[in-house]
Length: 80
Image (cartoon, rainbow, N blue to C red):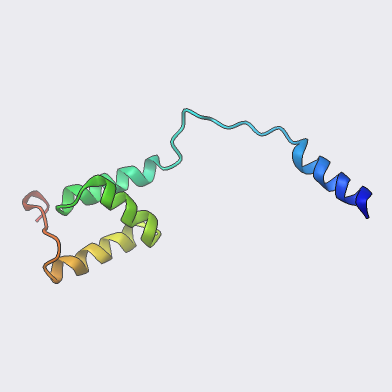
């Protein structure tokens, strides 16, 4: 039993994985946050957090639209 566990551990940790430290994996989501923040009067960081929280730009946009209807957030004039 311990030999098979050692074999599995060796197979897991002997793999060489390269990580690109200069690439932001959230770059596309940050851009989506910028789009939302130009459309609605919110900070880019709040828009980014909403996209992460709701799972997509479309879902965050629906939530912002609902908040707009409730008067909780303003629509920017250039987006209207």
